[in-house]
Amino acid sequence: MGSIRDWVDCHRATFRRVAHMLEAVTLMAMMVGGGAGAGYFACQWQFGALMAQQRADHQAEVQRLQEAYGRALEALAPKVSAAAGAAAEAAEASAEAARSVRRAVPVAPAPARRLTEAERAQANRAIEAANQKVREGGK
Image 1 (cartoon, rainbow, N blue to C red):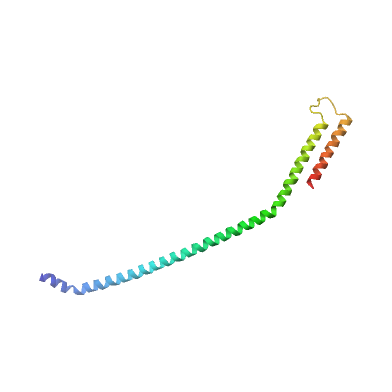
Image 2: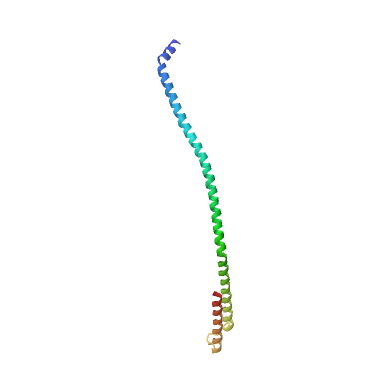
């Protein structure tokens, strides 16, 4: 056992240097790890607050856009209704013109038969009446 004790006494200075170096490395690792851990948790806390703020801002923006679109739809609704009414009147006038023309012109005219002057005048009057209704419906 004496040889081990002699060997330890001989290398005591080396053991102390190694112990001090190990202590320094451990302290540096703990400082770096502690700083990284503290920074990580601080970022997590800030990230949570940032996400909460972003969510609130997003909801406020969605609400603002919904209100703006609602106002736009309310402003356009009368114009769309008026356009739909005008289109319905034009369709009715067109249908009436088609009915007038059908009444004025025979359903299946013979290919060789020409219209008489009275039939031609009646068809022209029906077409003019239909055109007049279409013009009135467009105003």
